[in-house]
Each structure stands twice: as C-alpha cells, then as structure tokens.
Image (tube, rainbow, N blue to C red; front, top):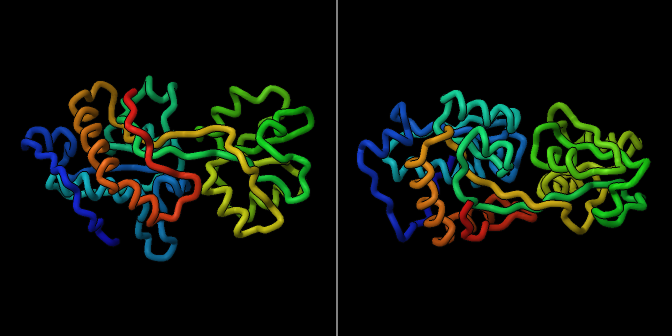
Length: 259
C-alpha cells in the first residue's frame, strides 16, 4: 500500500497520554464498510486497502507516532459494533441521528450524493418519480440510504437486501423486473452503469450523506482531537487529493460544519 505523500501545513502534536487515548493498544485500529467505495476499497487479489478512509488512518497514525490496522467489515452495523465493543479505536460511518445515540461522531470530512439506478427503458426520470404505487425499490439493509428510504417512501415498496450483492446481481434484479430501482451512493450506481450499459442512473440525488469518524460514546478528548485533525486535512487539500485519487463520483470535501 502506498503511503500518502501530501505534506500538511499543520502538525498536531500529542502528548504520550493523548496518543494512548486514541490508540489504546499502541496501534491505531480502524474499521470501515468493505462494500462502500466512498470509504475505501479492498483489492481482491492483493488485499491492499485504498481510498479516503485508508489515507486518513495512515495520516492519523503518522501524527500519533503509532502503527495502524484497517479492518474491512461487512456492514454499517458491524462497524458500529466494532467501535462500541472496543475492538477498534475508530470507525468510518455516514452520519445518522440514530447511530449518534450509540457512538460519538467527529465533524464530517466528505459529502456524498445518493441516487437510483433503473432500467434503461424505465419511465422513471427523476427521484421524485420513484415514490409511487407499483414501484419496488431495493436498498442494502442498515445502510444510510435504506434507513432513509424506509422512513420516507410512502407509496413505493422497499425491498431491503440483507447484504451488498455484486453488481451483476443488482443488474439482474433490475433487468428482470424484480425491482424497479436500486438506491445507493452515486459512486456505486455509476460503477453499476459502466459495467451494465442497459442500466442508467437518475440525474438527481434523493439524499446526501456525510462521512465522518466515530468513537465510543463519551470520548470527548478523542472527538476534539479528531475534529482538529479533520479541519486540518480538509483545509490543506489532503482530503480533496484523496478523493481524486480514488476517482469517486458525486463525492466532495465536506464544508467546515459543526455538529
């Protein structure tokens, strides 16, 4: 795995006690959702992990002066549990109010559009067309898009997928008429279309999600340091460069907002 070479203008110096608070075992342990390209990707052959989450972990570990471990996990729920149980020190998750009752969130580092993929000959033209009787929408259970659609769809039927299927399976569901639309982050939907040209992506987003770092509930000093770290890497161009290297579609640097 290549190390990040971007030089940052500000170095946050930690005392040994502060470093120990963020890396309890002497190694910074992090988790992310393995099927979410907006966080990171795992190379199927080499198992190398690349992407924004990986870049941020490496840079944070460098500043802490510790080693790091990055764990790909199968779902948002698994990442949440890995943080709550202390299996890892930090996790990467999209912000959700319900999750924020279970873990503490840093400020955001990226913002992502979410949209629908539909058949090429579908009469659905924009996101507002989807929520009507007779339409079935698929989304991955527990992911932010599925949680939002479960709460907001009034007329359409939601088909919650237990895990993230490969693109071939999603395309088959659409082209066979099993579902009329699939809701996910725009990066994944654009990748689906590149692989299966008979599927198209709607031009607008039905929602936007923000990516952040989570820690165990009540870790005030950890959140404070992470917020300073993220403010620095946003302002320096580090996050922007990471997103560009990852070639993510519909993803940008989050504005400097506070929770």
